[in-house]
Each structure stands twice: as structure tokens, then as C-alpha cells.
Length: 333
Figure 1: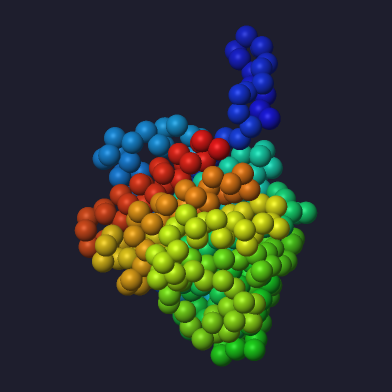
Figure 2: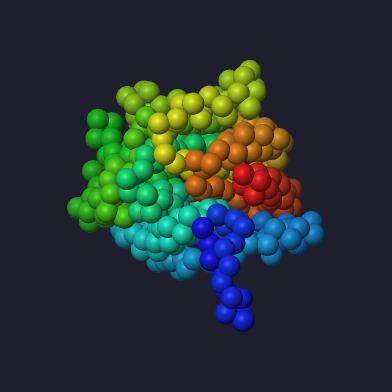
């Protein structure tokens, strides 16, 4: 419960229990293509163009980033810039921890999807004794580690870090000692590892995976609602099924990568577009169904890249629609 003080010193109890707070993370050092650092501002420009007051209604926290390191060479080829990523994750996790500890709801707008590992760390820091469920709406599983990643891009590793995995059964790389040490630190940001159980992870729209990720999905029997399955069931039923599957979780985090949507319907304004995704309407329907639950403690939207947009600022405009719809649902709880 919030206690607010007026200028005359009178203190009163606010009429709400939670506040929505935006967290803006411009880091793109986990991505393989450049431009996702501009995603949060592209969404804000879309809001200005649409006459939306979304970013005037809520407090917004802008995190620092280490994007200047992109001008420097990196020696850790199996996990590019992982030493710098530790600093990015720690600040990000600390901010999520602070907001969540106040019982407020962080709504995170990030550049690349590596940020999700830090968001999950921050949520566990704030709720160390609570079981955290994760709904991952994405074209990709992001279950690689430095031992398996074909690219070394850390935006493909946040979930592997969160479940505390190396996936050495499918090892194809021999990371440097400095990489192994930094990976261990990354997995342990917040002092808790693993942060989530694979049993408490649900995928939606994942359709572009490598064999190493598929191994973990099969090993842990991680549910993935394919695009075809979501259409057969309908998003309302998918949302209900996900909440039932995560019913033993105390809190739930929803992570939405815009590449979960079909680029031919929206645009190619994201770093790793994959054809045959969900539609914007389907994305909103699912997210709104999920966010009605009081267990949802955080929503994150990632990977808008205006430099790659083949339709002007279309991806950011659609992302704004999803974001406004999500915040509206959170407001009404």
C-alpha cells in the first residue's frame, strides 16, 4: 500500500496498491544486428505521432547502457561482450528488484532480448522465496549457452542462464576460461541460480530453434504453443491453459519479443524475423488474457529495430498498440 504526502504535510493512503513503472533499457550488445537500441525511442516516436499520452501517465526509469563497447573488439567469441553484459545485467536487475520490492509493476521496454535474463534476476531478488513462472512469446527459444551458441550472441542465452544450464550434452564450443567464469557470474546475478525451473516455463510461437535448444526443450518437456495450435485453440483458451500450467507459481513474468509476430503482416523491423508468426491481434488477445491475473508481476517488450523496418516505423507502431493494450489491462486489475 502507498502512503503519499501532500505539500502541507498531510499523509494519506493512496487508493491503489500497485503502480506501473516503465523501465527503458537501450542495450543492444547482446544482439547480432545493430539498431535495437533505437527500439524504445521508436516506440515513443510512434506514441507522439499517434497522439498517445502513454509515456506521460507513468514514471519512467532510463537505465544506462554499454553500447559504446560495440566499437571495441571482443575476445570472447562464444559469448560476445559477456564481461560487459555482467554490468548491464546487474544494473538492470537492481532496478527491477527495487521496483518490485515496492510492489509496483515494472513494464520493461528493451533493445535486445538479453535483457530478460536481468529482468528475471531482479524479480527473483525481490521475491527470493516465491516460485517464478515465465511466459516466453517469441520466435526463438533463447536456450543457448556459450557451450552451444553458433553465433555467440547473448540475446540467444537468457533462458539458459535463468534455468542455470550449460547444456554440455550438446556442447559444440570450448569457451575460454574467462568466458566460463563470466557465464557463471551471469547465471548467478542476484545470488540465486537457477532462478526458474524449466517446469515453470511456457513458450508461445517459438518456431526457429537449433538442435541444442530442442534438446533442452525435450529434456525438460517444455511446452511450446505453436502458431497453428494457438489458432486451433484460440488465444483465450491458450491463456487459460498457461495459467493452469503455472498455477503452482506464486508470480509470473510475461516476455514479448516482437519477432513472435509474422513479419509479412507487420514488418521486418526486428533483428531476427521469422515468417508465419502470430498476428498483432492474436498477440494482444493472449497478453491481455494473461495480464488479467494478479500473479503477473512484470511485462517486457523487446527487439524493435527501426533500422531494419521495411515499412517506415511500422513495427514500433504495432509494438505501441500491444504496449497500450497491455498497460490498459494491468490498470484494470
